[in-house]
Amino acid sequence: MSPTLILSLIAGYFVVLIIISILTSRKATSESFFIANRNAPWYMVAFAMIGTSLSGVTFISIPGMVASESWSYVAVVAGYTVGYLVIGTILMPLYYRLRLVSIYTYLEQRFGFWSYKTGALFFLISRAVGAAFRLFLVAGVLQLAVFNGLGVPFAVTVSVSIFLIYLYTFRGGLKTILWTDTFQTMAMLVCVAVSIYLMADELNLGFAQVVKTVKESSMSKIYFSDPKDSKFFWKQFASGAFITIVMTGLDQDLMQKNLSCRNLQDAQKNMFWFTIALVGVNILFLSLGVLLYQFAAAKGIVLPTNPATGTVIGDKVFPLLATEHFSLFAGIVFILGIIAVTYASADSALTALTTSFCVDMLDIKQYDEKKQTRVRQYTHFGFSLVLIVIILIFQAINDQSVVTSLFKAAGYTYGPLLGLYSFGIFTSRGLHDKLVLPVCLFTPLLTYFINANSKTWWGYEFGFEILILNGLLTFIGLLAISRPRVAPELNPAA
Image (cartoon, rainbow, N blue to C red; front, side, top):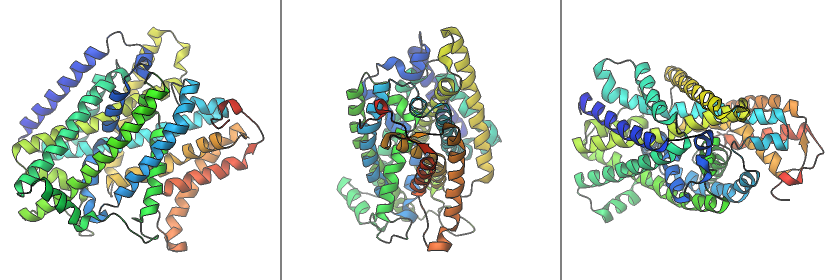
């Protein structure tokens, strides 16, 4: 594929997004930007959330990891369903009853000022780092496919990518993103389906044979029974449940979409159908991974390996095959698919960061609409710059699978949120509010220390469940600084 062709595809794609932005951002207000005026159809929200939840990490890393991790990720996906059940039955009723714009406002009402700011701060850190990881992955693919050949530095690739996101989101915010993400989710699903179809055709496999090939592959093993193995099924299952609760239910990005529904019943319908769709899409990505390795083996293609370990670099498998060994049409579909899934996640993250900072840190509602618009747009631009800086830092230090990096980072930054909300919902005690931030800063450090030594001490290696440990330590720390206090009006069990 020539750089000119790929650049033309990217340009055409963003022209479509900008047209959607222009049409949907007319007469946009702060309420439109933050919660889409609370009148979004639930089925549209459910479909748009698929692209937001998956991102370029799923698109590239999940298929790439099947050679080393098999289908152990299915346990994580199964855990997701439990997490979404908790969100739909416990968290969403709470958010809708309090009519929140930012979900971290709950912490102020439940505990006080410092708890509120602490929750918002950890979200800002978590989502900024997570969004940067995702964008880093795709910017690297575009760099390899296009910009290296043109002599364009990586920093320019990143800056242009984020500028394009800013361009179509800074006016309409969530009102625009629901439409652009619907378009982008469709583009992503078409890409995966076409990629599987074209590989099956190259390997002379019909649908039944594809299913049989995937099912019988040694890479499709799901259940791992050794508790000390990082792939242990039940450990992965529990991790998936808690990852979902914090990275969706306690995350302004995903919950902002849910809060745009007309009422709680619509939001719960959205969550139910979204869960079913997300499980199916993840199975599709894992199947794609098996076929990628089967295709490479059948064609005698040498896959990129880590010089130090000799293992295949999973994150590079799909991009390499799609851009250098698939047909031109398949390569075009891949580029469009990865752009779609990544920007569906990144545009939503950028809007959520802007929303949380404006509502939680700046108390933007104190201003008139004209000033709100100005402050919101400056903040949106500021976070665009923050993402660029984080991506460049990550480029300098990254030495492992992006999907692993993402979830490990989330284990440390989302853990305090898990502890705070668990303590607020499942106890009736109050907190010494000024001590909350020190506790939430200390527990990730303690978690890191335990994780670094667990293999030596107990022969146990933490995986994604590091999030559970961090949340538990935070809960214990909050219990230590708690005091008797009852707030039944905020307790969903009351």
